[in-house]
Length: 478
Image (cartoon, rainbow, N blue to C red; front, side, top):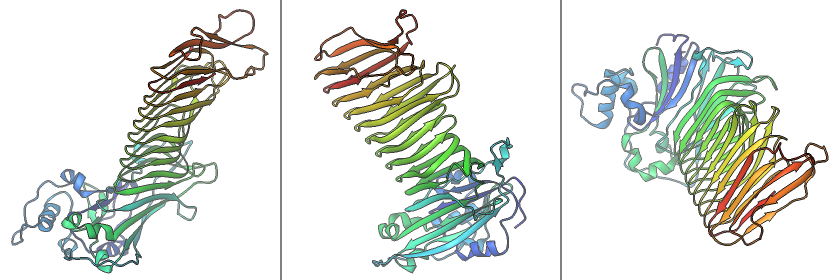
């Protein structure tokens, strides 16, 4: 295999179509086939992306038309070129015996050389993209870590297979592959009918660890893009922001949890899973979106742009959200949305600009709304809208809030709590509350709160708060 160019992309391909001998990967590594500068790394899945890769699927002469041979024909005849001897391997056994003991086998460690990394103060070319993507048809774990022992010009991929019986391990085949001009990869495959064998699926678990280099403390290396796309796999990222950061982060999964075990930093981020939980600490200098279904969202999320947090049939709980305003001409936005679950969140509004603006929206149904805005800058403007149904709604505002409020419920009652406050400016101003709908059992209460210096009310900040629920109690602490 020829030495690859500077624009080479390394792909890790995982699928369920055909078998390839594991020894082929070791041969490829020993022969030094993975050389050159790596600009993109992917872990990918044949089933989802196959049509992009093959241009024809005619059957080799003299071969039967089973799925494995048809795939071999597509590989040999299309844009992926794999030697025939790397395709023909043993098929799946009829039954796989299982035991109560799990064996762990390290399949291989792959070192990709000459990764293009940069420091924060260097603007990289677009070719410096580092991308990891994957989709597994069997259960697995994908872990991304950084290590001081990792050479700064390399990354390593460690593959470990857990199995109950050696016959399960023998189902996995690996090969070196080329895709498009100058793009190389490694494929990990299982027989096509493995997905119909419940015992097979239960008997193995693939654990992949991507090891990245790191910078010095408080002088992190930056990677242009980190992207994952996995099925039936938990994603865990243990990359400390003080050593390694990302311009773009995209973590996608189905039937798996996504977690950040150390505070990680990015310019923009998108994290999505289905039937899985999302947790950890994510810090974005621009926008950050977190999305799941049938799962919870927990942790700490910080953005200097917008935060978009959503789930369905799951709670947003034990969560802290921080909006940092860097541009007073634009409002920072936080959107929280779920259904059939509560929203429990502490919110910190920060900014060193004059008169920053913030917009916060929270929506749920059949779940409690329990939110507290812990801090906001003096002379800032907050627009808040919170709504739920069939449960209670509670909001606490900081002393720095100035503006109007409106609280509604269709039944039950409204509590307006006037807390003891001191002037956040330290100027000795007096807190003023105006309630246009007095009475604790009203179903619609409106009013305003502000700080007065005794010289009139011309400088009231135009903030607004709306809190509503149905069939539940509504409480505003201001």
